[in-house]
Image 1 (cartoon, rainbow, N blue to C red):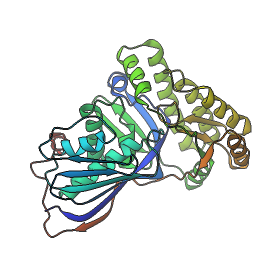
Image 2 (image 1 turned 90 degrees about the horizontal axis):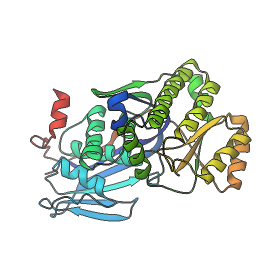
Image 3 (image 1 turned 45 degrees about the horizontal axis):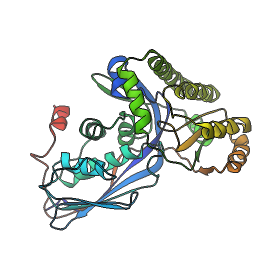
Length: 360
């Protein structure tokens, strides 16, 4: 018997301001990484209910696909459902369970939706079988599945941002990850939040090509790539200091400088359309900004004082971009609803060794 009749978890997506790309193992294992990011009020959801008799069923509202993993079938590590299949495979889900996944953000738009979904599902499946993992355990297990088991060329920032939530400085070293909350005065927080703008460029992208280029360049210790990433990390640290001082215009200038560095890290991070959108926003009053995620498409994040925001909206609307509401989120992954069944079964014997090692 599963431990619940219904279980609902959710995890936020994120926007990163500085340090993006330094969270890839190919870089931080040698040079150390740091990302300044915040969770925002768009979420990924995992809903678990008792299934039928043929193993774990997975339905994704985002990809409009249905997958089924019979208990004795080897995992196929491909396709739109590769991530949730990998989670059920690695956790060795023994009971019949129905999994429904949904997200408020389209896949491939640079807000870390894949990491957010993995975090929501890891939390849900562990809790379903009686194990309440902490945010660090959830994040590290999600990273292990995506990076080690699936071989995805991604970093660790998305999973940690989704698991912990809030505005954080996250450092990545060979011996572990540290999450430090960044504390702002209430008036600074309010001005900061109200000055952030998010526009959908109308295109999603496959970030894997860009990230593989960056990973290969980092592994080869390409001097130009390392130089840009070191500068990006330093700018991220300066952004944190500016925020903590309440120097928001300084933060915006550093955000702009970081984007100028990031666009030189790998081919495909920007393109003529993205350059045109960003230039129009700057001309209309935005002080800084960047393309979210690995680049190439997705969302355009801007820092713009409120008096100039109508001008920015008008300029980007003429280019076909639509503004999305943006609110910061202080919460990480959560169990929203858990209707208990009669028979709670712990996940004893099925907890991956990585969790046991983290708890020792």
